[in-house]
Image 1 (cartoon, rainbow, N blue to C red):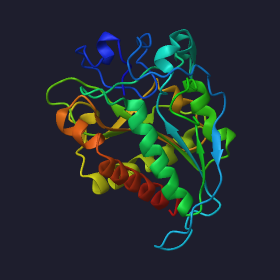
Image 2 (spheres, helix red, strand yellow):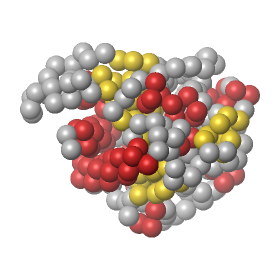
Image 3 (spheres, helix red, strand yellow):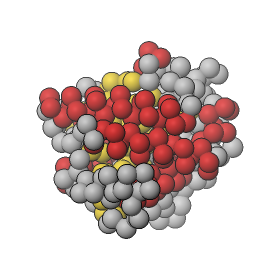
Image 4 (tube, rainbow, N blue to C red):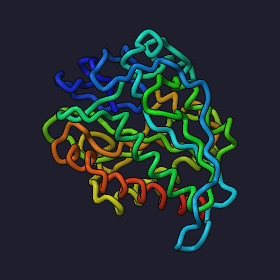
Length: 283
């Protein structure tokens, strides 16, 4: 996902070509306000835990009982109204400093990334709870500010989670740019074992998401194989548990935007991600 209002990060009305970097703005200043912002300006300092409240899955019972999953819905609806907070730089790991957060992108029709991923994250949380998992969301609402990428990155460790999944949607305005990709960190605070587990999680998420949604691999990054490795994503760099980020489609592409704006498709997204998590944790 890309921040709105920065030339290379794609605004709804600005042409840009760089891929969204998930809660982070590729080292550039975070965005200018957009109409999708809300009036709240309270930074969420810690993840919000959701207890296991769902009924057991009809397919195999509570397969995830005892598991803890952190879901990170990218950005936040109030970020555009709190740019002083959002633009301040924070530790992104391994000597990298980046803006706390950004506003994210939107479809040409104005459907904001933060709202799209918030909906997918909550659908996913419901599916996971129904299978017995405890779910921790890195933000409790879609009308606040933050949390910053360093807080998000450390959320998995603080929750003693089995894994963390960060959900985004991209904003590349190139005419042929569409599709999804899964991002991995080049290095992680958790070390080599967490890095290796994250690589396995990435391929599992890629396979399950493609099967559930039919969304193709991104045509504009990752070499067309749906996997991208980055050194600058604090949300992943700072994790001490297996963690990946998914850009679920390109909101600036007409075909992808129509899918991402459809509630039925968002349920398919959630189902694919839930299946990936279940498969990974059963390995």
